[in-house]
Image (cartoon, rainbow, N blue to C red; front, side):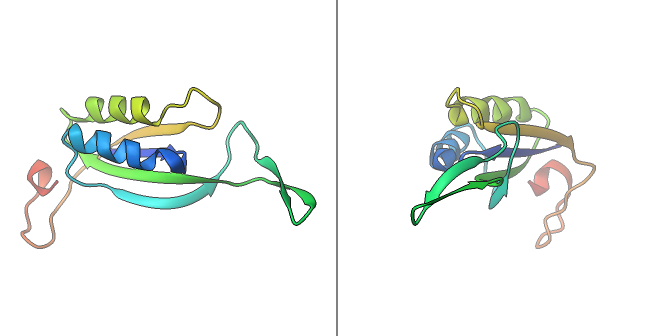
Length: 112
């Protein structure tokens, strides 16, 4: 099993969610997060005063999936989230040792 974490731009969330649903992803966890990468924040004007913010709003997707579906999930996120501009985000793929559905006590791929 794989655990995929993707950090994307907030306005791309719905497009990514729809693409993942079409690709066979049954569920995911979504969090609103803030962070920065190479772009190092941005300058904004608030009530006439200019200030620099170091943390940009992003959306974090967390998806547990089978080994077989993982490459398709990564490709789907990359295609749907891309704006071809700096700050599009990152995708991380981690190995999952085990998983259990609490209600039924199913384990492994069947728990997903």
